[in-house]
Amino acid sequence: MNNQQKHLQTLQTIHIAMLMGQVMLALALFFLRNEITVDEQNTELASTFKLVVLVIALGGLLGGFFVFKMLVSKARGAGDVFAKLAMYRSAFLVRAALLEGPALLAIVAFYLTKDLLFMGVAIVLIFIFAFLRPTASGVIQDLELSGEEREVVNRES
Image (cartoon, rainbow, N blue to C red; front, side, top):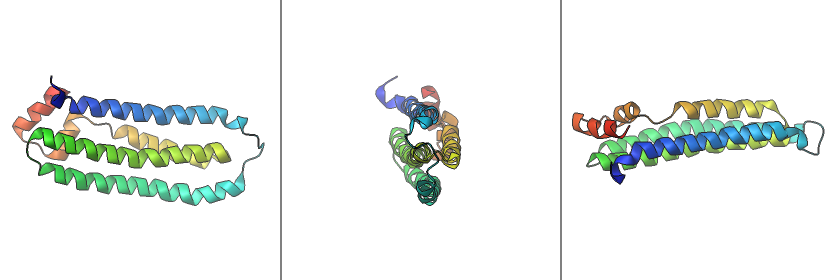
């Protein structure tokens, strides 16, 4: 398998690394939450963060969905399957970043305020992120690949 044929494996590795980063940060800050010097929940900061985190989370979800669809539609018109896969990788990374950023913000907001709403938002975003794992069948479906192009993708998985 040459370097051009490792697109899917690379995407899967990146996805797992990004997912594990979110999960480990959430777990670490959840267990370290009592190390904050303030003994009470910081309600003033929490009320400020509530609007910000919810807007950014919703923006990340919607933005990730629409940008991914737009970039994938452009990738469908690319020349060969390797160009399509490279463009798909870019689309995937943009969507992943637009989901990961709000999740990390929600985790940090939880740590600073001790408000479980933020950890709930982060968990929802992490689950959505986990279910967006790139698979050969997903790539084939998203890019609407032909029979010959499907074979290239299936060899990678």
